[in-house]
Length: 105
Image (tube, rainbow, N blue to C red; front, side, top):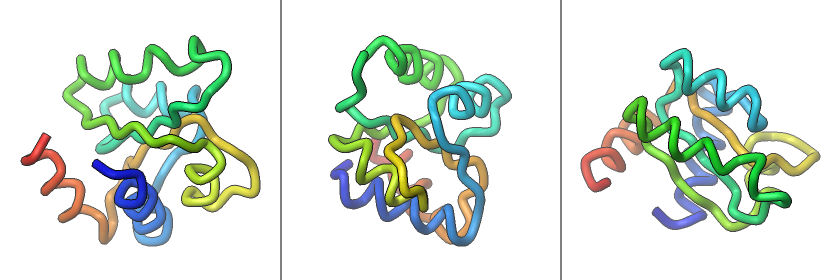
């Protein structure tokens, strides 16, 4: 998935569904089985803070999208700050797009 598509899905879900922001909240959403899509920024430093997210998401069968910029991810999530991770917990109008991504993954 390209970055622009991931940011677009996050924005749509933010406006019409529900997202959680940050590594801790994303981890909780995955563990509780609420996450439908996890988007993780590759430019996190140190990398150790988010390395577990793709692994636990895979265990739970959650699709993971990697994007280049935590600044752009934060903006897509409606934040004035950067964020390392976002989980879509209620898809809203992004449901069809997330479903099509699952089929191609």
